[in-house]
Each structure stands twice: as C-alpha cells, then as structure tokens.
Image (tube, rainbow over the protein chains, first blue to last red):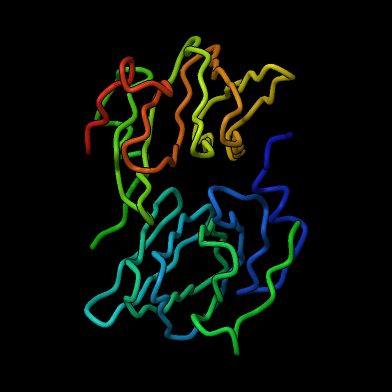
Length: 116
Length: 116
C-alpha cells in the first residue's frame, strides 16, 4: 500500500480526454485526466460525475448554465444532467466515477480506461 | 450550481479533526478537514476511507506499516483496515465517505459533521 502521487501519475501520459485509473474507492475508479478543447455533450443516467481541478481551468457547460472551475475547485454534475467539459488550454483533473462508467455516457463511444 | 472552492471552505473554520461537508457525490459526503496531532485508531467495517492531502503532510499508520502522504497525494484505506492518521503539523485534507459514516468508526464517539 502506497501513496498515489497525482502529479507523478499525470507525468506518465500526454493524451487528452483519456482518463487513467490510479486507484479504487468503494466500487469507484479514481482517475486523472488531461483535457484540452471541447468534449462531447453527454450525461450519465446512473451516476453523479465528480471533477476536481488539479491544474488549469475548465468550464462545465450545462443546458441551463456554465460553471467555471479553477485549480483547487470541485464540482459534481448530478446524475442525468447533460454536460460538456471545455478547457481553453490544457487542464489536469481528478475524476471519480463508478468502475466501468463510459466517459462519454455511451459504451459505444467511450475510451478504454487504462490503469497507471 | 456552483464550484466548490476547497481553500475558501477551509478558511471558514479552525478546529481540528472535525470534517465539514462541502458537497455530495453518489451517496457520499465530500468533506474538508484540518488535522494536527494524533487521531484515534479506528476502522470502518463497511467503507473504504479516502484521503487527499491539500496542504501539509500526514502519516496513515496501519498495523502493518505507515503510508506518508504529502500535498497532492491520495490514499484509500480499505474497508475494515485499522488506521490512525497522524499530522506532525497542521494539514488540510479532502475526505470522501458514505453519508453518515462516523469519523471515529463508532457513532458513540464520532463528531457531528457540519455542512459549510
């Protein structure tokens, strides 16, 4: 059992919108991800979606408004709420989702989440 | 719906070992806490225990070894594993536990978690 150093994990990859699993918690994946640009509009019908900004800044666009998240800020998109993350420049995030949750909300378009 | 700024939440209190609820995620409380000194040995039979160090450094002592966590490091104590958090000087943490989890593992000795 050892500490999970988030910066060290983030230094191991460069691709965007491809969450990497760094740990497990109560049936959830703990993930880090690098993002830049616009993701797709999507929702997760059965799970909330947790974002914590480790570096940079992102907008979480929702149909009724946008929440801007800066470093050290966290936001939970409630289950079923359509959202689109947008990063004007590269940002680094911690994500927590139930193991197996498709990142796009749809298994057909989801990336495979590698474990670091 | 707005961003949860962890530093702003932490600036609102000074007591130690008294987690404050700052959000909710899939039936879990998202909490910030300031810690200093030794907590009690305890375990949570039904839930993992997630620690993310936002500032400072803590040791998670377990019966078979100690994990040191520095700023930006995370650790999950598996359900049922006895542990004692120790901070030589003040540290600030993000904690995630199922809503209603007693911080000491025992409802009789647990603090009431206020919401910020």
